Length: 354
Ligand SMILES: *[C@@H]1O[C@H](CO)[C@@H](O)[C@H](O)[C@H]1NC(C)=O
Ligand SMILES: *[C@@H]1O[C@H](CO)[C@@H](O)[C@H](O)[C@H]1NC(C)=O
Ligand SMILES: *[C@@H]1O[C@H](CO)[C@@H](O)[C@H](O)[C@H]1NC(C)=O
Ligand SMILES: *[C@@H]1O[C@H](CO)[C@@H](O)[C@H](O)[C@H]1NC(C)=O
Ligand SMILES: *[C@@H]1O[C@H](CO)[C@@H](O)[C@H](O)[C@H]1NC(C)=O
Ligand SMILES: *[C@@H]1O[C@H](CO)[C@@H](O)[C@H](O)[C@H]1NC(C)=O
Ligand SMILES: *[C@@H]1O[C@H](CO)[C@@H](O)[C@H](O)[C@H]1NC(C)=O
Image (tube, rainbow, N blue to C red):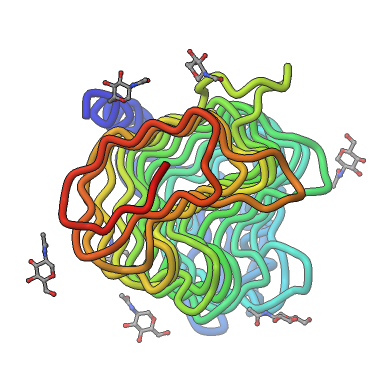
């Protein structure tokens, strides 16, 4: 809990820089509504017309590194992308409705440093709501996405790596795929991921190291799938020297209904989860499969699918898994036996462990 308040304090500091969305004197503002939008930078009009996307991009292109655009207007960008270049601060104060541009983000920042998005409210069905790769010192603040499909925030797999990424409160409702999917980040701090009625994962970490997350909270996430409110996959938490010394710290995972609660797979690990609260998951409340140095230090599981340690033959078996937990109205199974598993279980669950 101490770490949770430290994260909250870090983000409180970040948000005091500009108070609230659009406050103070933004270097550029996008105003208007319907089919009439204006982008004003200082006293210059840099766009005037019916195209909301063009107004936003003109505003972004008119400022320098270190300057801020506040999009006050609400509107639709259609199946297009907005691009944010290095050092720019983008605030979405109105509601930005987006469409599906295949393989692309509605808003993207690629190969950049020092980009900040302190506020954003997005609706629509993007391919990716926000898309990133090759970023350094990226800061996302209060991001609210009420989507009708698509994936919320994505860091690309087959592209340049990212370092020092910070997110405050990411609140995603209605994504068809994941709320937040990372690949290739070294140094990630997230205060909260709140996922509601999301098709695949709430938070999915892959090839991500040195991560600290306050809360992952999912309700009806991953229903009918093998995904989970919190999933670690594809060597997540494996340090560059190959070992799994703890480098991923999660304060709390909460999950209700949906598919899995917590899922660690494909040679991930190096993680401590301080506390969990899972109930009525439609698939395994917890599944740990071919993972190394995973510690769940406390909390409860009530009902839902079996708590399971398992292994696929393609990777080495689980090792150094330590679980202290109360499990009720469910069962706990370890099969095959892991290498150096340490269970400290309470509750009424049936146990079939080694
Ligand atoms: C990002 O940088 C990589 C090289 O590091 C390059 O291959 C790629 O084309 C760049 N992408 C963009 C959009 O600049
Ligand atoms: C999300 O958007 C839908 C319309 O797409 C709306 O009906 C719903 O009330 C919104 N939900 C929230 C929580 O704002
Ligand atoms: C998340 O966003 C929805 C709108 O999509 C809002 O109704 C809800 O209150 C937000 N939840 C949190 C915890 O901010
Ligand atoms: C976006 O369009 C592609 C085809 O171009 C489709 O495969 C995908 O499902 C669509 N996504 C959403 C969220 O509509
Ligand atoms: C697990 O991580 C802890 C903390 O870094 C480390 O002390 C321990 O050696 C690791 N255990 C294994 C078996 O990797
Ligand atoms: C177990 O489930 C029953 C209902 O099926 C519920 O009454 C009870 O509170 C649950 N146990 C715990 C410890 O929550
Ligand atoms: C197993 O975990 C408990 C609780 O964290 C701890 O007290 C104990 O020392 C551990 N045992 C081994 C053999 O690591």
